Amino acid sequence: MKKRLAFISVLLSLCGCIENDLPYPVRVAEITAMDVEDASAVRIDVAKRAVSIELEESADLSKVRVLSAAYRHEITVSEPELVAVHDLRTPRKFTLRTYQDYEWTVSAVQSIERYFTVRGQMGAAVIDDVNHRAVVTVSASTSLKNITVTSLKLGPAGASYSPQMSDIHDFTDGAEVSVTFDGKTETWLLYAEQTSVSVEMASVDAWTCCAWLTANGVAGSESGFLWRAKGDSEWTEATGVTVEGGTFKVCLDGLQPETVYECQAYSGGDNTPTVEFTTEAAEQLPNAGFEAYSNAESSVYYSWFNPASSELGEQTKWWDSGNIGSTTVGSAYCIAMPDTDIRHGGAASASLVSRNVVIKFAAGNTFSGEFAGLVGTQGGLVNFGRPWALRPRAIRLWARYECGTIDVVDGYPADHPVKAGDPDFCSMMVALGDWDYRRFGGTPQSPVQVNTTDKSTFFDPDDAAVIAYGYFSADCSSNKWSAFPQVVDSAADGWVQLEIPFDYKALDRKPTHIIVSFASSALGDYFTGSSQSRLWIDDITLIY
Image (cartoon, rainbow, N blue to C red):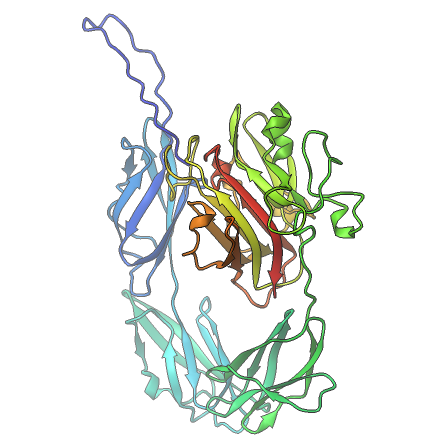
């Protein structure tokens, strides 16, 4: 987060009789940008004072060239010099000096594509890059003394191998291969294991309206899947099968929720036993149209639940907002409220209004979770997330946005500097994950705690606990959103229907919680935005 610079000038007497005993101003040293040769990505974590560099395969970790670097303050000096060539085989410390010293850590990682295939293999090879071992499975009829290696890549691009791939045939006791690159040599052990099974179903992962099937068969053989609803007499051939060596996969789409199906895999003329699976339910978010609200929590603002509702899911709070914090200085500073005049469907929508709340700027917001308390007069604690075990593909909703001009700037992330006069921008975020509340500071119901005064606690979509993520942001009013690819439909009164897809990092993990968050000013966590911005949300639907 950057703050506006405050320049202090000290007038010294020409005769030198006035002693300057003012303390040096605090200038926190931060790296705001880096350009690195052969880097596919550079990630700067200001809170942790760390830079992580992702290098291309062809790069040399021992000779990483930093081409340029930008700092938050022009007076910043790096020791050793950051713009230079560095050995980053292990993380390296840098001292950034302003009027004070700040230690930063720069590290580099290199993703290397590795593969090992042989003629007639079963499934995919298992590659252990830590212990330098690779194992492939072949049929029981295959002679371990005469195996043909069809592809081999164990090091980065340009590595040399000894012996050559074409000279490796005898796997009776395994085969040893030397892989040389960047002036060093790794010794790898290659093994071939025999199996009497010609085809096996490796996994069946049923979602709500689709199922992911993976099987291992004989490489080069005709392979595929058959499926049917349980009770049907006819099998259906799966389309869209992808094959990689002896492993083949497919996504069965268009299935019905909570339905029992059967499937088989075949390869080389053999079929697996029939496997039975049941698709998941197609549940929707509680109070997804924001129709239920009440003063049950406070007399000065509405909350998104109503104990008197006939719907069980609307009787307790699933959605929350920052109202409890913003209204401590008066009910006029409510930032989330029902709107019965501007709505897409039903009797009301959620109206999110950004305000300058005397001491701090507050973005209009609503989210799945609970407001957990104030941090003095400087910020608040928010626990994000609600229990959720299903895997939707997208979230669809109606939104209307009036974009204001930024008139309060207290901070911003290093990769998104803003200034007064810039257009504000809204944010809509969805995430599925298996967050552990003991690690993320929240509660079993709402596990991810964010302290708005501590950047190190801000939500990280790249965290390992995140299974799927989706995001939408716009720096203009909704009547100008027609060019956004997420737009599905629009109405003349400024309402726009959006579909935000979930980008899954892992297809075989089930979430424990879902986070849904909307804000009329995306930089509200940094207390930056426009007091004229307003976002309406209505009629949310999960797409399975």
